[in-house]
Length: 59
Image (tube, rainbow, N blue to C red):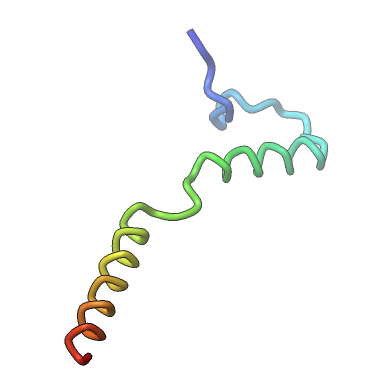
């Protein structure tokens, strides 16, 4: 069975974590989240399509 990358507070060791390991753990945790939400990308595409529609209607 695979362990999760970040230990829960119960599993965390009592000794302090060195600064470089804490920074790497923080970067790894943040890299699991997508940079852009799929809904944001879809909204931008729909907004661009509406803009093209308005511009084509004016010409």
